[in-house]
Length: 95
Image (cartoon, rainbow, N blue to C red; front, side, top):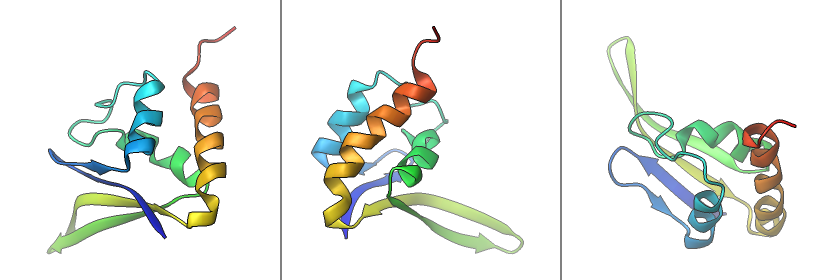
């Protein structure tokens, strides 16, 4: 498995090619307060990645401190080609 990102408040870590792809979309990385590009996680999943929360509980409350985005190595090329298409469909200008 290849780790594409660990998204957390204040100190996310990204695979350089993945971050370049995300930055090139022009989508506001802070669309979801405190977790950069977190609002795009459903698209990461649809393109083939796995998103795993880093969570713990405080009684009845769950606190997510970050999420890890991973993908099998053999799916990386397809993921990197497909994700921009999904994001363009969702965030592109309407005709």
